[in-house]
Length: 294
Ligand code: PDD
Image (tube, rainbow, N blue to C red; front, side, top):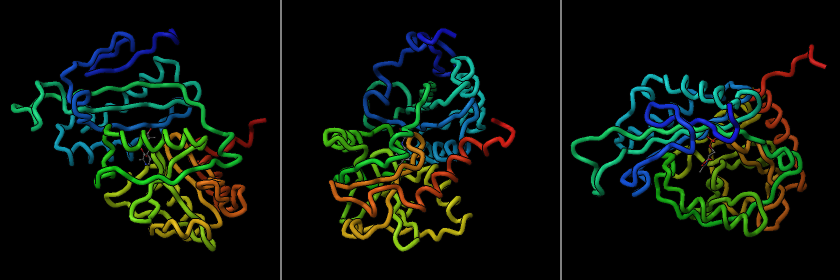
């Protein structure tokens, strides 16, 4: 394939990215009326694809967007794999972006009547994990959570997340940790975990956070290894007493947090439980190292 002309998949058709067009009447463009997923792949193997598809279907159902057949039956995953291969993104690491909007119709706040077909868009990109920050830890800021109270739906309405992330970027830090009513919820595009006295804690998966695929996987890996976990929020005042703090996400993996608003967390270096879960997650993502390999 020509790396300068990757293919995308739009409404059932493979076509060069430069030729893909979405209508100006698309409700994704006009209202942000849609949902998305970001998947990770390693050498063409998608990580936890069913968990992402389940979350997408749930989001579509909650927003009453018609569920396209290829998403209902999961065949869109085959399209994603083909796209990775057509683009040569099945050789190394990649991300797959999938967006579904309510479709294209003259602007009305209520849903179009009669119903219209949703817009379905898939693309792939090469991906390089932040091994540097995964090794050393990253700094974060605290930021007020200004999102709506349905953050469990992965909508393309990301303005509060974008403004929070920009504030983190302006402060030369990696991530903004969102705070509501004095409680640590999650990052702008990550989930947040604290470790205190050997117990891992993260905010419960209800309406105020996105229930991350990586979050759930890391909780399962921790429990498998006998690490006690509580889905219980951390108060901002507890941060100073934490032994460890880390982030999880599809494009973040397990990333230790060294400082929050300049205040050092624990020893300021990645702690033992973070390292344990980082290794466990890497094994899950990349597969067990081949003992035959040199
Ligand atoms: N974001 N919380 C929020 C608000 C997110 O946007 C994300 C993912 C996560 C982590 O979820 P997961 O482990 O399923 O990736 C938590 C994606 C990567 C993004 O917007 O690019």
